[in-house]
Amino acid sequence: MEAFNLFRRGRKLPADRRPALERGERVLDWARVGDGDEIVVVTDRGLWLPGEAARLGWHEVHKAIWSGRDLAITPAEPVGERAGYRVVADGPVRTYLLVDPGDVPHQVRARVTRSVAYTAHHGLPDGGLRIAARQVRGVDGLTWTVRYDPGTPVDDPAVVAETDRLVAEALSGVDPDL
Image (cartoon, rainbow, N blue to C red; front, side, top):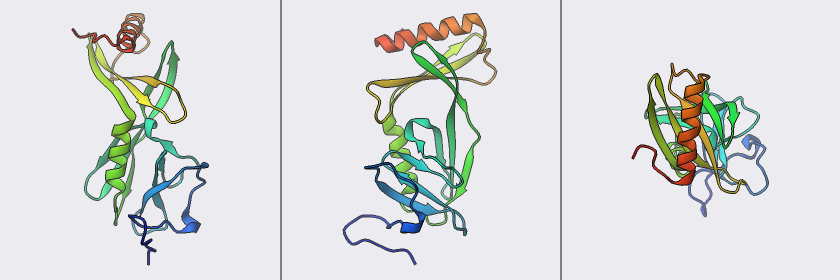
């Protein structure tokens, strides 16, 4: 039986299930995965997923989809560094059946959305890219990333030059599509 705390919303996470939180990190909600012992834990700093030794920060979640019973998380994995931004790609989708999800889906959506300060998609002759600026806890300013659409020739010098131009214009506050 799950423990409830009269003075807090939500369910109290059993002490033996608590991940290795950083100092000051707060648990917002949690949910059991399927009928097993694994859990998903939502904190103010990110998402603790079953089988992972570290938290996935909100800025590292590229996409989160709630089907009504399954929570599918697509992490953004770094694949390169360029001047002023990081190139990321979709990591493997991780799907978790949450039998009693509580507030987990809402918290995940709200926290991922809140981390995004800017996002724009741009078409290229042979593909496209999405530029995003995210707020990262403990980092001053915004962290900029680019995620290329599948099939985009990411190493083509013309694509790199156009990406650099689009990111520079986004950084300056100019809408490159006007």
